[in-house]
Amino acid sequence: MRISNQLIALFGLTTLAILPCRAVTQSEKPMMKAVVIHEYGGPEVLKLEDLPRPEPKENEVLVRVIASGVNPADPLIVSGKYAKEFGTHLPLIPGYDVAGIIEKRGAKITKLKVGDSVYSYVLWGGGWAEYAVMTEGEAAIKPASLDYIQAAAVPLTALTAWQALIDAAKLTAGQTVLIHGGSGGVGSMAIQIAKARGAKVIATASTPNQDLLKQLGADVAIDYTKTKFEDFAKDVDVVLDPIGRDTLARSYALVKKGGFIATLVSRLDQTELDKYGIRGESIASKPDAIELAEITKLIEAKKIKPIVTQVLPLTEAMKALQQAETHHTRGKIVLKVADEPLK
Ligand SMILES: NC(=O)c1ccc[n+]([C@@H]2O[C@H](COP(=O)([O-])OP(=O)(O)OC[C@H]3O[C@@H](n4cnc5c(N)ncnc54)[C@H](OP(=O)(O)O)[C@@H]3O)[C@@H](O)[C@H]2O)c1
Image 1 (cartoon, rainbow, N blue to C red):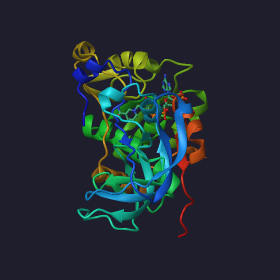
Image 2 (cartoon, helix red, strand yellow; image 1 turned 90 degrees about the vertical axis):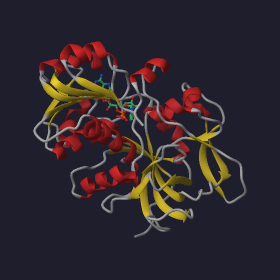
Image 3 (cartoon, rainbow, N blue to C red; image 1 turned 180 degrees about the vertical axis):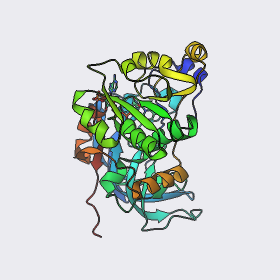
Image 4 (tube, protein in one colour; image 1 turned 90 degrees about the horizontal axis):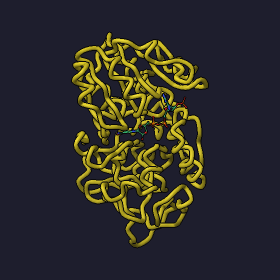
């Protein structure tokens, strides 16, 4: 699903909150622990409750969740700011990244089996719970080289970076890409995907994250708090913008004619694109099990490694949400839902 500029203009979005949420339905036992919200608001509206386990539909699998990733989309959805546009209903369980084990499968599931370890970007959320349901189009086999905590840090951010750089911008070997926010969830994946593609990477972050940019493989690391990125990035082929505002406004002029800007958080200014003879797209990422399997290959080939900087129990979801809304997370925060199973 790509969101058009018109749609963004219509909703006046400054941050693309494209993610709907799974509504909680009351049904019979068995039960599970889940983080749920009954009203929109800040982190204080999160409640840890006993709820009925979801039952997979014929095209879904039921996954016993071991870990679930945290994204800036979570506080946005919890706030209810775009509830009308995205058709979210209360009560709801946040959480779009899941890593766990398939417990049950619907009649129409053909590839995945009970007992498979999977990871997934779940479009309708529901990951901050002991059990979650997802379709076969959302879940891929978990990389064997990652534990569940690491795996839960991957799907949404890696797919967003992939869909921006590979699908939209068609980044190729030898090209130069400017990646803003390179130390964040999406940026850290984008740097590694771009390097795996054979591109030259210029990346920005604040002072404490310069080491991380280098560790991830950035050829040029820019401290945006001390220097202007324009002084280091000129005539780039592609810009990835997860920041918006002034950062996006200043980036058009740095792209060479025929180049591409992919923004995750804003609508693009067609006048600016035309002025520099460049193209662009406002990205709305989506689950894609086939692309996630491609990302798995890069992980197994040691080309991509998730950066997990904080692991919290489900009981501390509120703290995770507070961190996610700072927009200054280094790598990823992951909620540990259950112990890693014994090998
Ligand atoms: N459209 C979509 O489909 C889609 C998908 C995923 C994410 N998003 C959006 O994309 C944004 C980024 O997501 P994320 O998961 O990467 O967030 P994140 O994990 O919070 O990371 C944000 C990163 O941006 C850096 N940063 C903050 N201000 C900056 C600036 N002025 N210049 C350069 N870097 C800056 C921060 O590093 P420092 O602390 O060093 O500043 C931080 O590491 C969020 O707004 C999210 O909602 C959109």
